[in-house]
Image 1 (cartoon, rainbow, N blue to C red):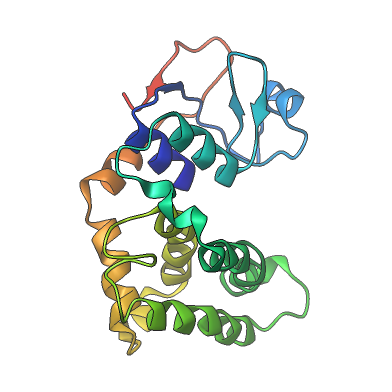
Image 2: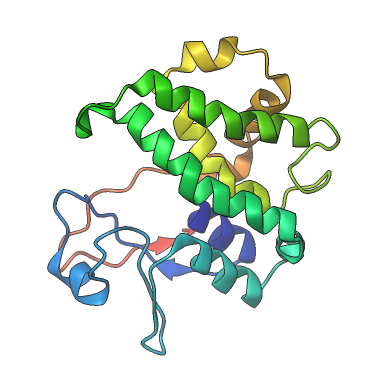
Length: 198
């Protein structure tokens, strides 16, 4: 999702293939043995298989709204690191607790709240996480906060955390978010090419 947002805002267009992670096409595994999305194959033959790297690739080609300005801040990079490591660790064990043995989802939910509280405080002084405009910091963290809410929407929406709730809803109701969340049919070998954004 965050890679899609960066590609869309940068004005790049890529050939798009929707895959199911439980039924990965061999051509995807040949490009990246990690077996996770996204996987971006450049014309040069270079493969980019980390979403943060796709963001950097797209925005370094064209960054019309200066989203990359947040990457100059060590604090921003630390937040992204915490999000992608500690927060994601606990989010997985909260939202997908059945995949893990002897894990109490509510304990992991409480651990997630430590990071949520940090973001709530950060948003008390600006509309977005870096300043008053969207930046790469926001889109890097957004998908994970969205998943945290999806795990129990009623509970999340009942929290006394208006800053993070308002921040999330700004994105969920935005034209950009709605445009990148279009549904695509699963890609099969031999299918006609489709492009994103289309």
